[in-house]
Image (cartoon, rainbow, N blue to C red; front, side, top):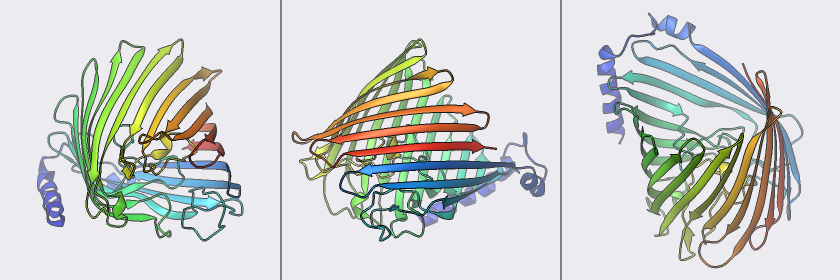
Length: 398
C-alpha cells in the first residue's frame, strides 16, 4: 500500500502543470503570507452524575489556531493546532484506563497541545482534490466516519484522501488511513490507533427526490483488533416537497483483519421528519444488529455522541445490539434554538429493555459568540445505571 501511495503522490506532482490557475497566488511566498488565519475559543463546563461512580465536573478551554494557505499551482497547505487546558483542578478521568481519579465518571477532554490538522492539498484535473497528512474526514451524517467534534480534542486521520466531483451532482471519495488520532490525546495509551483502513464513499444528489450514498468502510485496526470490521451500505435521504423528509439506510458488517471473533451483523435506519411554522418534528428507528448475542454491529470511527443519547452510554454497542426508537422536536423562540429528543433503547437480540433517555438543548448566537446549554438524562432499566449530564458552553470564532 505504501508503494501505491508513493505512486499516487508522484502522479499528483506530474499533473501540477495542468492545474487551474484561477485565483491562485503568484508565488509560494504570496500563498503563505496571504493565507487565511482563524482563531477559535471554546469554553465548556461539564457536570456528570453517574450512579455507582463519584460525580465529576470539568471546566476546560480549547484554543484552536487554523491556517489555510492560498493555492499555488494547485497546491495548498492547511495547519491547525489545538490547546486544551483544565481551568479547575481535575476531579475526573479522561479515559477508561486512566489511573488518575479512579472511581470518578469519565469526561473525555484531556489537557494538552496537539496538531489537529496538517496536510498538503492539490487541486488536480477533473475536479479532483488530493490531500495527504493529518486531516478531518466527515462522511454523510458521521454515523460511520466522523470527527467526534463535540469533544474538546477532535478525532482526525493521518491519511491519503481523494475527492472527485467530475460527475455533475456526484462526489466520489476515497481515503487510505494509517493512523487515527482519537479524542483521548497522544499521551494516553489508547490515544492513537494504528490502521490499514480504506474508506470509500459515493453520493449523488442529482435527483429532486433526494440524495443517494453508497459506501464501503474496510477497517483493519492494528492496535485494537476487536474493532476491525468491514461495512458496506446504502443510504437514501429523501424529501417530499419542502416540508417532509425521510431517510432510509441499510448496511451489512463482518469481521476483518485480526478480529478474534467471526461475525455478521446488520444496520438499519428509518427516519421521517416534517416541518411546519418553524418547528421540525422527527421520529426514527435505528438498529445495530447482533450475531446471536455474541457480538454486535459497531461503528468505532463514528461521531457517536450524535446517536443513541448524549449521555454516551452506548459508545460501544452491547453484544446484544441496540434498537433505538426516538422522537425529537426542534425550533426557535426569540432567537434561541431549542431541541429535545426522547430515546427508548432496547436489545436487538433477546428481550432486554436497556432504558430511556431525554435530551434537551438551547443555543443562542450573539455576534461571533454562541452560548449552548445541554442536558441529558438516562434512566436505566436493565442496562447500565442512571446518568445525568449538564453542559454549558461558549464558542467564539475570529
